[in-house]
Image (cartoon, rainbow, N blue to C red; front, side, top):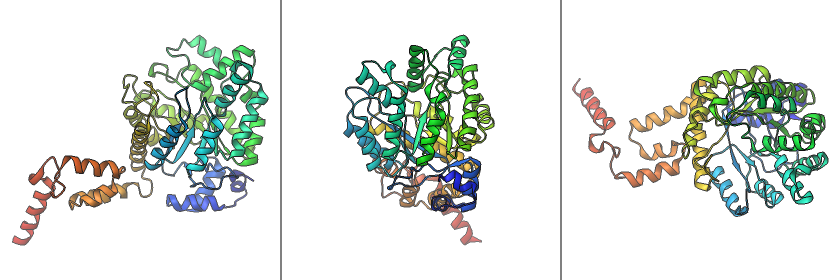
Length: 432
């Protein structure tokens, strides 16, 4: 039985209890959220070395980091270094988005190396193997795709990103709408290429029940990816994106009826003024399913700094109701990120997530900031560094930019406002 089916029967599972303890909520709160579909706990039944994570309404906003083999220069060791960097920076989940090389080895290394829930996009591997086997990815068979899905699930993958809602009708809508950037989703564009080449409907849509059967058997969470996500802010909330979201809402309902946990992956480029509307629309059409947003980036001109653009969009989106942030690195739109960019991207996304949690009043969020405020008031540098979201970076900057023996900060020195005011108040008290 899946977590969802057990929750619907009123059962509080050990997994729900562990999530509740880590979140500071009651086990019944988690059970009810899982039963309603507003909380998911991605955990393959066959997975052993996993740190359980709950994603959804009323829980801390979570962060995912993407790694994977891409191109001839890709190295398994480089991707392992990125996983270590992401885990060290505090990511809540890892996604292996490998599209080339030894994809099986990459996935198995990720599962062995990281205790975090692991997600994949199985279409990538199915297309790569079809290219090798038949000489063209367009010759992929439907059974080839589902064989890859089963293989990945048997390895222990916890959640699957799948473009089930990208139908031929929606592709035609996108063509008529005249988008600036027609398709930017790697999986979506290749899937649509397969559909057009084979004059066939999306197999992940037509064979959706087959996918649900596999997911239910191993309690794998489905993450419905959006093939029509906007690739520039000009295309945000266009007809194709919204039409696909309607289809995804129907697929959410069918998954829940099958006892399968499900979340929805969201858009990439959204202007600030459309973020709240985008989240509200997804929550309405997809019946409160957890929203896994990619960024979103809020401007198209931040090349080289897209982790900042995404942190802005992520904070506002999470405050508006999104529960899971896919990090964006500084290398987005430019190239493949290294381990340093991966670490930086995770930290930026975690800052966004925490800012939203404070705004939403989630248990313990504001208390963390209060502890930092008190440490600053007391000029307790050791405590400030320990409380920083990235203690390693904070300690490095403290060492590089200041006299570590000084009580004040590097900016103010002996004229530190905290120090001067504290001395004045202490003197005033003594003279009273």
